[in-house]
Length: 42
Image (cartoon, rainbow, N blue to C red; front, side, top):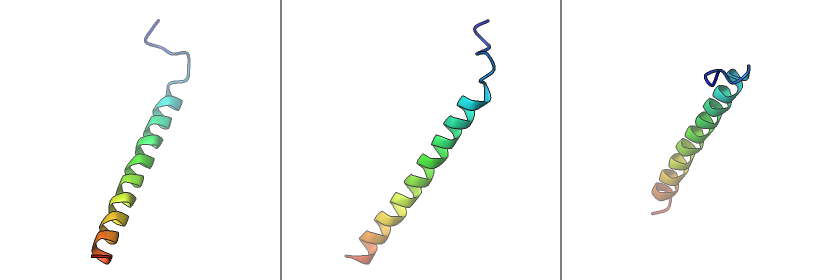
């Protein structure tokens, strides 16, 4: 009974995956901008 949530089994997974994907993209963009700023302005 505690194993099944009630039908919302795909929403939380998709939301968590989407959040992880956005965080990864933000991290990559941040590193790219950071390295570009460091290399562009010594």
